[in-house]
Image 1 (tube, rainbow, N blue to C red):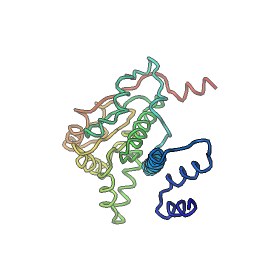
Image 2 (cartoon, rainbow, N blue to C red):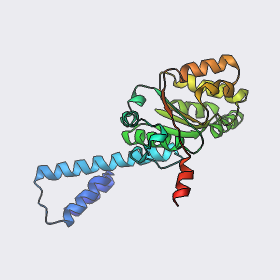
Image 3 (spheres, rainbow, N blue to C red):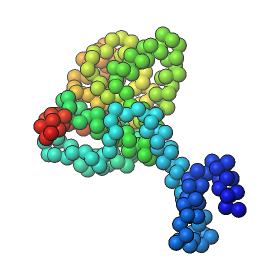
Image 4 (tube, one colour):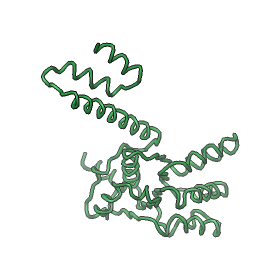
Length: 243
């Protein structure tokens, strides 16, 4: 009878339940009541599906780093507000469709924090995509040529959280500028966005270029955003010194 039940669980793709029931049959020291066994099997199936969903979301996001908010270094010279980071752990900013801007010099941990917030969003069940800004603009330029642009831009628009890393390393050309405008316009007041940059926000106008478009982008992106302005020595240099 148990063999038939296990086989039916497999056919129904109740993999979490199947694994839990298999373990319960092996462990003869625990005697479940019928209510306890049902609760155990249902919880196991829920956990299995939840964890698989997180794995799928995390894989689809394509993060630069495997990062967790709990591992952030809060040394005083880094200028990180622990309370602010803990508020981001709830991902209310995603629910409220808000932006986070992370600035600071090279190596201070911008990408790590952005990725950690993204991982946290995935763990809650939000759809996230992570991009190096220049690579994203290049990819979308190619998609304009091969006819897949609308598909790509619609996919980006549907993400609960978009992370643009290394923004501002190159001055935007006209095509990239218009692409950025479309992305920000699509997401404004609809979905959350994180932008990480080595440059302070007051220098972004020059990077974007063309005053009218730059004003429109920054008005939507900067003025109501949460800010993290990292300071201190490069974390990579510190790690090399410690080794």
